[in-house]
Length: 288
Image (cartoon, rainbow, N blue to C red; front, side, top):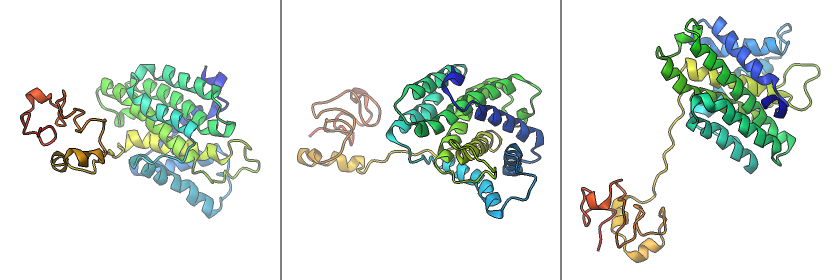
């Protein structure tokens, strides 16, 4: 199904080959970027001549920029239609049982193909789905191989590694998607591809940076928590008229989702009848 819908089936294989190259050659984790750059230059056949210094610097920068984007939860300036699929791929996959991921991605890929998005809008999404499918197959195979060199970075418990697979796959796709929207990199080819062009190079490099960096260096995105503009004490002391102009989660008078007459859940997460604050003592649920 994936190859029937995806016009870029090669990028996923090159992603897997890149992971193999990394684990076969990496001496110390600090040199991860170095070996990603060597692989990319070799793959696109411009390692035989000295590339312009700006080209070297641009390729070298992909690693750090992709890492920072992943850790800081940066998302690209995608269209509304693209964002719907990006959210499914990046977040939906984390709620999918590890062994069901190929079906999940293939289903999304089919819907991308059938969507009204333009060919150019579909391109980064197809890059991500193909890399995601191949990334998943790669990690499942490596986890199943007790002699894999990746066990240097894996957990000794295979079940823990399997549980991590959705996050590893998501990371590789996030790098792919983010850098697809940032690419201006020159491949060095005399006749660069007219459709994918530099996007292909940068997306592949970023997928390896974040995909391998997640496993080898243990990168973890920052947690972004929504914040209330009003604290509970202020809310508790506001009268009905003041509350009319306040922003709250439901149409009720309290953030607990209850009306003044009483509701089931307090803001503290406990049913109001059992709330330790008492019906009249809880800052959010007290009555007049």
